[in-house]
Amino acid sequence: MATHRIPIIEWSAVPDTGGQVWAGAYDEFGTNDVWDRLVLVFADTATRKGLRGGFAIPKNYVGSPALKIVWTATAITGNVVWDYDYRAVGGNDAESLDQAGTQESVTVTDAAPAAAHNRLEASVALTAANFAVDDEVEFEFFRDGVDAADTMAASALLFGLYFEYSDA
Image 1: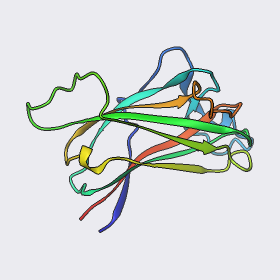
Image 2: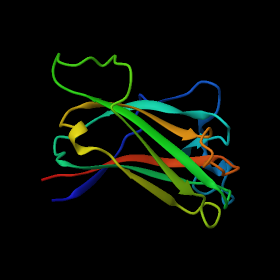
Image 3: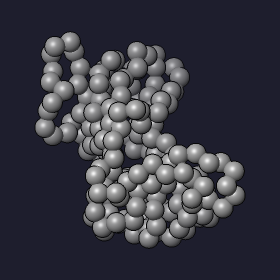
């Protein structure tokens, strides 16, 4: 058995309207201007803003699903609250892709880095029985500024959002 990790922010991902989440160049936040790549910027706001997207469950999926969040910030105090809501849709002409509501909603609170720009990785377990090979997973991923535990007074910079799982 091996553990696999796939990126789940694909071409179909779209941020909320309102300008609280956007793709920005990392060198706008960093100091060395060497690693100029896109990151998703989640502003410090008292709202619940994020992005929506989708991905397919891989052919070798067996279980042990988890969401992995790779991020950083310029701030070194406070916490960020991340929310992940999803619905897995499967079959051929069996389930609607246009459903209301979520199958599961999970939350993780992660502390700001000990030093500005340190790599952070938050993890949250997902329910294995909710997924099957080839399911189309529709998701929403938010920084939850409405939650009182979200106390970091700076933008959170998302480097990657991953679906981790085990195979046989």
